[in-house]
Length: 455
Image (cartoon, rainbow, N blue to C red):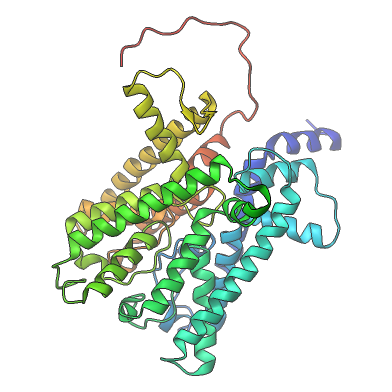
């Protein structure tokens, strides 16, 4: 049976929903990056990078994770490092943001379908100001990363030649703001452990990570505070939850590691506080490490997993279930315990749809974690303990990039499981699974009585 051109166009439009456009956009970038990394001049040892490793690295970069199966410092050429840098930049600010910016610059009209995809990619509720927001994202990214590159170049100039200092400054500024944990500064693959007593480097990196993690909408809202005189509820929630998590994380790591000679036990109090704060920041989807993750206490491992799972904020460069999801769920728990029928925050009611999305996001994230962990245990056998594999899985799903040192030792099956986790985590479990079900809201014609299920 032959399909006419109008029918093909209609079928394509029906299939190409906004979330699917975002998904396939990221997939196209990942596959392009895989091909570029397979080029013989991408590594210092041509042919040493297998297809699985190239796919893993391209996915890790595009999904701004930072988990690596090869040492970028010693095994990748400058060309290979630039590919990883560009993939992280595109993945950080968003595929649709990049393409939309190009459309705007060449004065091409942005269709409604593309606007819908932009809304999905930017985690926006409506269409108002999408074009301006897209341009502002590019401006913010350029200004913040440039400032970070200058500061880090100055910091690195104390350790390296001018040329290396500038390249390291640019690379790590982009990686920090995009919350991607790749580094090219450590031949031993120990990230920033060698610089854990340098407050300038760690604080600049932390500042960039936090800015990238709170989201572009919040940055814009804060910058316009003088004109509008008040922040939106979303910004208030994001900033409050972020501050609480940073404080509790810092306090938790400081207490847990205070006397641990393998981490901060032998440091002075200033360095102990600095590294505890940096661990709290980086665990929220950045992936840089100033401490050996394998040498930390069990409590610190559990706290790191919790912070990674929560992740950053909507519309940001980070992953996880998001701070706003945590806030909505906790607000619901407290309201339920107090037998409140309505959840009111700052004179705003949290709607049923918002609550349903938050609950669904949590359930899907936990389901992915459980199924992936079982898959990893089957793939790896008894090679690694369950807690180590859980750490790696959550790090991949939440697009963090922290590792307890097993990434390079994983077999191909385990690498592919983590690759899928990174992809789902960057798209968001809610959006990813929604792409496989009906996209349109179907209003029921019949009103059914509420169930009598006992919880």
